[in-house]
Structure formats: structure tokens, C-alpha cells
Length: 81
Ligand SMILES: [Zn+2]
Ligand SMILES: [Zn+2]
Image (tube, rainbow, N blue to C red):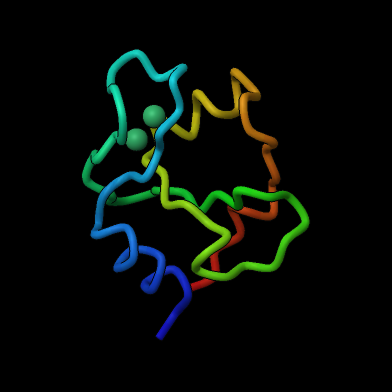
């Protein structure tokens, strides 16, 4: 089972973004994850485990990069499956 699939399952197939900077959602985003959704590590430098990553939709992840609210780590975007 690929890690990416595990993250998808943990997220229930929906974006786990809870950034306040996202004006298009309050609380959790819950957008359907499909296509190029992203695996974001909540703590940079930490190992990729299910408890240390969040699944994010493209919309939120683009904001994340722009706003730099959470530390952006290019490692997150490596295809792992
Ligand atoms: Zn989202
Ligand atoms: Zn968001």
C-alpha cells in the first residue's frame, strides 16, 4: 500500500486544511481530493508518518505557498506512489 493511499484514507478523501487564511472555507476545507492533491508535513524535517502529514487540495496548497503560513517543504511534493 502506497503511503499516498494511506494519507488519502486517513483524510477520508478530503482536504485537511484548517488554515484561517483560506477565505473560501471556515474550519476544515473538506474539498474532495483528486488529481494533484498534496501531502503536507506539519513539521518540516519530520519523517513522513500518517500523524505528521496533512492531505491538502491544490487550492489550499497554492495558498500555503503564497502566504507561507506553514513552513513549506518541497519534499512534501515528491510522488511517493
Ligand atoms: Zn483545501
Ligand atoms: Zn484551505
